[in-house]
Amino acid sequence: MKSMVTPETRQEFVRNFHLAAEQLRNGKIVFASGMKSVDSLRKVRMLPNRRIDFLSVDEMARLHVNMTANFQLEEEE
Image 1 (cartoon, rainbow, N blue to C red):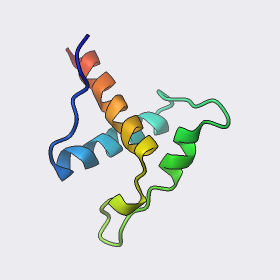
Image 2: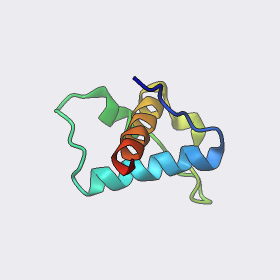
Image 3: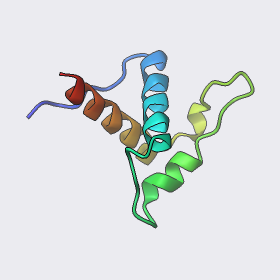
């Protein structure tokens, strides 16, 4: 079992958020009603300069987007 690859830069972290958002829009990820991940992702705010406000990212949102990015990497291999 491989360990999860975590982002090392802000750019990688933002990329993970965009990957997760794209998969949600395309219907590749569906949440059961009442899932905390959905609430956490909805609370993530964008700054006026279109960057992610990291103060609005909680642990659940961070874990979800990193997990999504890791699944994407596994599919590409």
